[in-house]
Length: 446
Ligand code: CTP
Image (tube, rainbow, N blue to C red; front, side, top):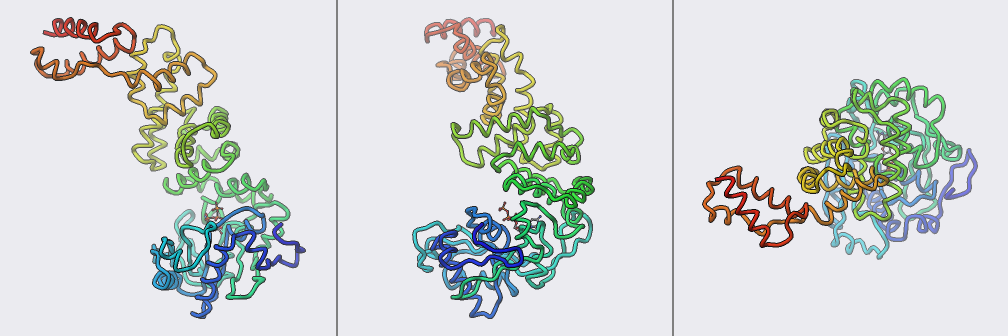
């Protein structure tokens, strides 16, 4: 725990402790923001994940501020004084302040890590017009803003004050006790009905922190599961994407699957042991794999579909509003998995495999490799394709076909494809042999 404290006495941090937890630069940045708010006579609070993670002693520099005042005007003012850009969302009264190098220099921050952007929101109350709909928001007080939040452990705020520490902690749901007791608990019984994305969030946070979902919260969560059907594909996609970026995504996916949550998204969205097993494999292979967090999440998306046929994969992708590119890639992955026996069969020619795999994305191929690491024949062929076959080119091209007097048409592609296939299958091994075969094919075509 960041600071010793008893249940009825919320912890408070000294300046030194905050500097150690957040870094001197981030703390200086917070102090500058606090000073500005003070000058404007606005109460300002650090809220949500960063406060929770201070208590959990987990690194987190996602600075979210709530103001009892106009957050957009405040962020714009900071940008006018110190530089950087703002991105504003008027309907929700929120703004991002994006720090550029000029702002960092004007703020005289040190070399330690600072966030690239800072979020400001006007304290608000929320009214949900219908289950799973986006809320109508009204300006409110910090207490109201905290009470509308998902879980007690996220409904925490620190009142940051210019110059003085320790800062007071606001904790209307007794999230501090839940952090000590390792519980995910909602603040009110309507929480999952208002916002069923919280069902995904509950399992995500529980897994990340090693917490359990408190029993009455679990009851209302179970009752709200059918509400997932009302969520837009985009909101579900966002939640799944966040899950795939967690440390142990397969555990969260298994928890959700056990409650039949995927079938609420789409009837054919079946997640079996196969998908969770492959996600586990992905995690185990991650250290050896090239790629950033986006690449790994993209692979995760493919593996989530390990038990799903191509047609269904396309329907589910449409429900989730996946991009055309990702959806096609996942469809290719499903097609590839359905052809694994053919790929590994001794009679299947390298050229046929190449032709087939040329129609599959590199990510689909990597995902299929993860699924088939134990099948030596398949693995070897996919690796040969990646390292060798796919790079093979003919020396003869379209110009040679024109010179040979062949009328242009689909026959050009067929001949070039046969020549490439002959190289890949080892039927020809020199330019001379390629020309011989070329002349033979042209003669047959004429
Ligand atoms: N929030 C909420 N209901 C949601 C989403 C968010 O009440 N469906 C609130 C929570 O209080 C959360 C805050 O908005 O702490 C910020 O949301 P987000 O950035 O998603 O949460 P973090 O707690 O910062 O999560 P993470 O650590 O994954 O960034």
